[in-house]
Length: 609
Image (cartoon, rainbow, N blue to C red):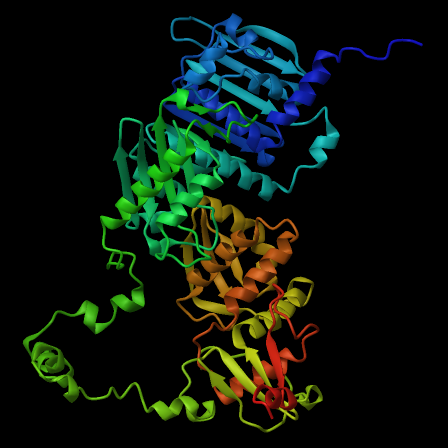
C-alpha cells in the first residue's frame, strides 16, 4: 500500500490558513488599515469597488518598506514585531503574527507599491495565488499602497458565500469605524466606487465619534476619565436619552485595539441600571489602557477577543468609572440646539418672561399652594384632569387625541362570526387595551400588538407586489444620515418605495424624502425613517430573518399605534375588525398574543359561582 500522508502545497496551505483571517472583504480592510497604522502613517485612505469584491486598496504615508522587506512581508509568519515568545506579552502594535499579507496574497491578486523616505526609488510587487509574478523598481510616493483585487478569485466556493454588496459594505464600514475611532489623530477616508463616504480630519476623540456616529451625539456625550496605577480608562458614554434598541454604537478598545467583550459590556449596563429601559442599550466608546503583560491578545485569529489576567478588577473599574461619569452631569435632559422644532416654537420657550406673565403665574392658586403656608387644601383641581369617573365611561364619550392617526378604512365586514357583538361600545383601558364584548364574555385586545399584526400583513403584501399609496410631499425634506445608516437606507430603498416611502439619494449620505405613507405627519418624515432604520438594525442580528422580513417587521413596529394612545369608538371598531380579518389574528409578528379571551363561565369560576 502506498503512503497516503503528504504535505500540502504552500498555496493550498495558505488558502486554508487564510480562511481563519480573511473571511470577507471587511477582514482584509481591517488588516490593511491596521498595517498602515503600525507603519506610523497619519494619512490613510481606503478605496473599494464592488463592496470590496473587485478591489480593496489602502494608501498610507507611513515609513514604507525596502525591496527585501516588501518581498518578505508576504511570507507566512514573517513579522517585525516579535522575535521571541515573551514579546507576545509586550505587544503594543495592531499586527504581530505575520499572517495578514500572506493570507490576502493566497486568495486575491495583489499589487504593492512602497517606498521609504531615504530611498530614491520604491518597489512594486505583483502577487497571485501566493506567488510573486513581478518585482521591479517604481517611482512612487513615500509610504505604501496595497491593492487587493478579485477576492477569492481562486476559491469560487468561498466567493459564493459572500453576501450582497450592501451587506458586505456594511461590514467594511464597521471595520473602518473601529480603526478610525481608535486613532483620531490620523486622517482617514473611505471611498466606495469613486464616491467618498467618510472624510475624517484629524481631531479630538469627541470630534471623531461625532464624525463616525452622527451629529445627534454632539451635545449628548459624557466624558469618562479615570486613572490608577493599574489601568486607565478614557472615552465617552451617551446620555441616557440616546439609548437605542440596538447594540450598534458600543465600542471597547484595549490599548487602542477594538475588542468584543460581553463581560465588560455587562459592567457598563450595570452602571446604566435604572437610567435606561431594560430593552435599550446605551452608547459608549471606552478606551482601556493597561500593561500588555496583564492581558493576552493572541487568543483568536482576528484578535478581537482577549483575556485579562484579572478580569474582575477590570470589570469593577469600568463600572465604577462610568457610574462616576454619569454622576457628574444632570441626568435631566437639557435644552440644546437639537431641540425639537415644535417645542422651540412654544411661547414658553421662544418668548421672554414679561412682568404680566410673571404676575399671572404668581397669583394662581397652584403657585400659592406651594409658596404659602397651610394652602395645600386650597389647590383647585386641574380642568385638564377631568372627573375620575371619566375613566370608567365608554371611550365614545371621551375626547380622542389620536385622530391624527387614522387607521385605514376598509369595507365593513361582518365581525360577529368571531363572536363579537355588533353595534356594541368598546372600552379602552389604560389607553393600551380594548375590551371587546362577545356573546359569551369579552376579549381583551392589546392595541399596539394588534395593529402590528394588521400592518405586518399589509406591508408583506405591499413588498410582494401590491404597493401602498404614497402621499407626495409639498415641501420635500432633505435628511442627512450617519454614514453607516446611509448604507442601510440605500439598500432598503426599493422595498421602502413599495411600502409608501419615496426617497432619492442626494449626494453624500443624504436623501430627499419626496413622499411617505399617508399616516406619516408632515414634519415627522425624518423621525419616522430614522426609527425604521433603528428597528431594522435591532432585527439584524437575527439570522432567521431575510432583509425584506426585517424591513417589514420594522415598518409594522414603527407605524403601529403605541400604548398610551387614546382611540375613538370608530378607531377601536376598525382596529378590531381589521385584526380578525388577518390571516393570523391571534399573534403579533414576534409571536406575542394580540388578545386574550374571557368566557363568562370562566369568570364565574374565578368568583366561586
